[in-house]
Amino acid sequence: MRGPAGFLLCLLLLLAPHCTEVASQDVQPDPKTPCANWMGGAPGYPGHNGLPGRDGKDGQDGLKGEKGETGMQGPKGEQGEIGIPGHEGPRGFPGYPGQKGEKGEGAFVHRSAFSVGLTERAPHPNVPIRFSKIFYNEQSHYDASTGKFLCNIPGTYYFAYHLTVYLSDVKVSLYKKDKAVIFTYDQFQNNNVDQASGSVLLHLSAGDEVWLQVYGEGDNNGVYADNINDSTFMGFLLYPDPDVH
Image 1 (cartoon, one colour):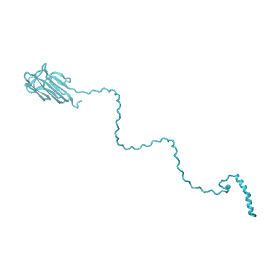
Image 2 (tube, rainbow, N blue to C red; image 1 turned 90 degrees about the horizontal axis):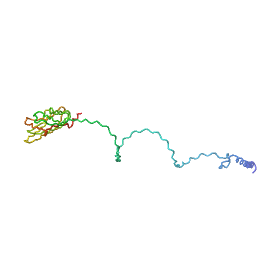
Image 3 (spheres, helix red, strand yellow; image 1 turned 135 degrees about the vertical axis):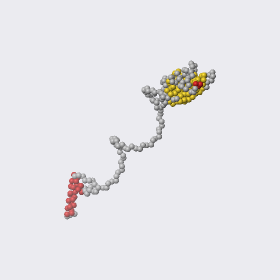
Image 4 (tube, rainbow, N blue to C red; image 1 turned 180 degrees about the horizontal axis):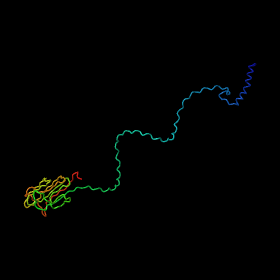
């Protein structure tokens, strides 16, 4: 080949080894490119995002965090239904005896009682029989000079009498406030000694009087007493009225 074309081909052949030597001294080209950097193509566009990878394994639990502050108290709930009673528990051991308490004050006891006997024969009729033999009269509520019991404590009383009958019939009555309450009659039998008795419960107010007397005329006053025969009259308070203190 002659002319300009042949001259250009010769020039390129001469320059090629020089170009290769210079390129070897500079930065090595990308293996994917056939020549030096200045001979590479334009950068390509970024590729599309790939598909998400699979979830990895769960990691280990971390350290326990600090306790948080107490929250606000919530509203009170409605009361629930009463549950079924549980089984009775085992019986416990006896406890130790407690200390002895202080001595209390004794309650006041109302007392009123008497028991008397006859010392004279054939008492006068229609007047209180004076029983002057005193068996018991601690409160002095019976008056031997009049033969009458005087109520000092309002309440319920029991009265009784046991009379020896001798020489004539006996008819006696127990009086309360000038009024006969009960009567007792015994007919005398010749050559015999008999007994007449009676008893009654009465409610008395303070100031009421109770006594025993021969009822009727003198032919019914066979009440008798001597050193071996007694005629007795008695009474006592069963219980006071509730308002008595």
